[in-house]
Image (cartoon, rainbow, N blue to C red):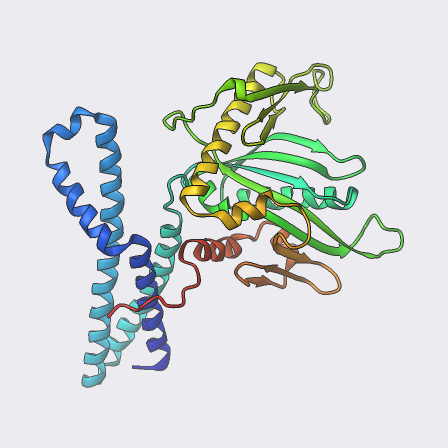
Length: 375
């Protein structure tokens, strides 16, 4: 077998090993057996909601287990075909089997990404907040660049973006903004983007053309539906109204339609100024608060303490997850995974998916060292 094909086989084996690890293979088989037995119990439908939940879990597990077994069987078949073709000198058989292995590798890589987006809320829509750090106009302009970057990424993915609130900077840029990204797996893709982002460039606002370092933070949390119960005691919340900012229709800046809700026990603050109606903004803000509280619980259950700490820390040195250098050289580097791009303009125009894929793998699997190949 040629060295290139041996490398593909090794990559497929390692990919299958990662899929097994993600499924927690032995526990998944036991759970699937239990769910299959449960499905045969006619009493399960006495509670329709619980039955539907169990059947969804069963389908997901069945799909995951079947996919791994299919890849393992196809891998074995193609290896045998190559060995047989080489023994008999049949180049057509060898070539077809090698092409089959290449297709398998692409399929395994796709399945790895899908497996990384199987968290409890990964399929949900997402809220994304951007906040400028210290530094005035510089960091406010950087926050605006980040807002555009995520909007462009979402558009590339075919997602819809709804701007919920924007606080403009004094001279340029924004102090903060919140957007609602709508689409399947929006939260799953965006969830690792929470943290501090650092920009190094020659400032367009510095008449001496000096190099400046700016920081802005990003915070991501899932949109939750009514089926997820989040108990909020209204006495724990402070509700403020204020006038919407920015250019707009005749009612903008004339009525206190914007709403800010502060959840005192957690310190979480949400705000919405999208609608002209204070009532609608208040309802949306309550939805956002429910989502933030739910995300906080997800963070605990998913053991994402490091990400949470980075996102809630001071917006400055030592807490950044990604660095964007425009001068004196051009480089975007993720400080968690080491993934780099020498085309910052492309990244800032929304080419974020490779960074997200690597961060998802890093978060869920950790470094892939120590993952055993399949036999």
